Length: 455
Image (cartoon, rainbow, N blue to C red; front, side, top):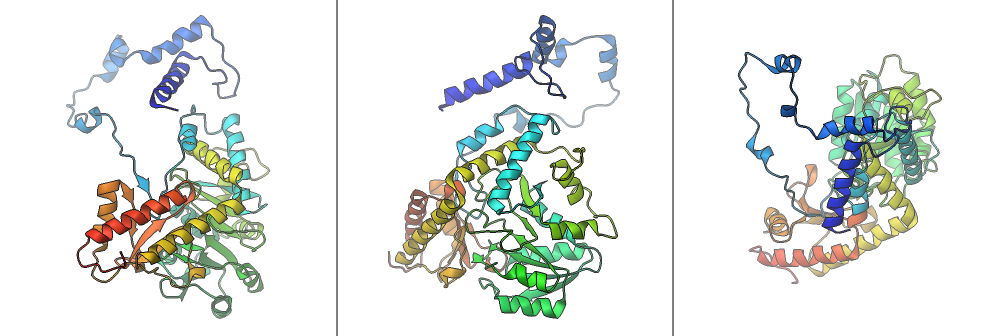
């Protein structure tokens, strides 16, 4: 679709919305008619406020106060957004199909047509999570909202939680858990390392927590935590297993049911390649039993899984108003999940690993080292590259952006100042993009004083 066709589409959307040429606009979903009266009424949306007169309106807008804030000059200009290739740790770029989905007409957040779309999103999430769990939905917010929802639903004051911390997301989880007055214990490893089953079992045995929290893809370091067997350990020690899969889901194998994972959440802006705005989340039966057995209410009404589950049609009760869901973002997620389903998870996982391997091989040819030497411990979605001695990492990042409008990122948390992070996620995970990153990296290093490599 070219820009002229896009403009025509937008014009048609406006005309249909204002002139009432689309049926089914009522709250009940009943079709509207194209009667002359209806047409005339809807034409009023073209009129400006200055064309409306009358004593009641005039008196209503009159005031003895002076406007102290004027309309800002910046909003009198058209919105300008550069087109960039986002090869950092997220967000990733979205396919045009996802953008077009967001242009579809708005629906009410409880209209039957929108509830149907929500139901389709749930089915797509069950596929990507590989679960038959009843409670699968989205928190209206980014990946942090998924983490917050996990903590505030699973933890009551005094509950023990063991956090496997090997990067910034373990640190954030511990912070959130403490805010809910949980008893937080840490199982710590250096940045880039992962936990063995023996280490996790020793921690469960020692601390006897109600919850074990693990990050599958630690995007601050690029580490990939093995999960197989962890769920069985949690059942052995009567703990709920909660997994952060924000940076990994869709890019590496994940089997919620087979791996006996009780809670998982992710973000829409990584491999799914939809805009950031929603945190898909799933609570298994054991997790929901813990929520229903709480002795005090969940401290956040907004993140209460019993309310969210009802709003998303995950229980046996009629849907109730909980909050106004981000309608257009749900459209985008639905389309992103459709693309995932069309490719298939096995193909998606293979594509991410193949592109990551191509990147690793190319970086080695440039004389660069990966932050994590053991390839089996790396996530293919967020790749951490060790910054060579004598190189200012910021200059390389700026070279990518200033010359090519390509984003790569520096480190975060324990990896800050030590690595570059290159994301290979979803729509952006292609051999062509890998080649581009390698070419720019070679140029950038050649322009950074003091770097000696195999260029």
